[in-house]
Image 1 (cartoon, rainbow, N blue to C red):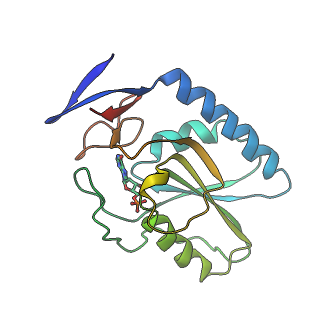
Image 2 (spheres, helix red, strand yellow):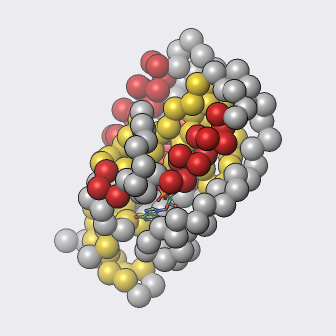
Length: 177
Ligand code: IMP
């Protein structure tokens, strides 16, 4: 088993570069088909989604606009539940088909808050893409249309996701041992 230390914690390999790449390609194909007649406004949620977003967008071949937003702070290995305001939302949302790209949905509180914020500006549609989803951690009902992998309720790091600021640059995803 491929082990890794990030700061004070031990992690083990959970999703390889190849597994991630194959699934990202598939998601890209599905999104391309679904949005063939629309020009979505893609909102990537920083910081965690940067690597997934970058790989995913190379696999989506419809004309689109891409922008970045930032919302909650997340410290250590458990969600603070303390959602901050949405930063960087300076696009005209009204009438647009918005596609939010997130790294992971844990409690679902961040995405619910973002959806509510977007809805006030009357978009034509809002769909969520999340590389990872922890179904057992959801605290609110949330529809995530495009999910890369459903994972157990364990802390993960890598491929954009951090543990206390570290691990975002890893090519693979590691799970807390
Ligand atoms: P939620 O509001 O609880 O769904 O939290 C979503 C955010 O928490 C994600 O965008 C991540 O930044 C962070 N997060 C949740 N679970 C993990 C994890 O296992 N590893 C790293 N970050 C996580």
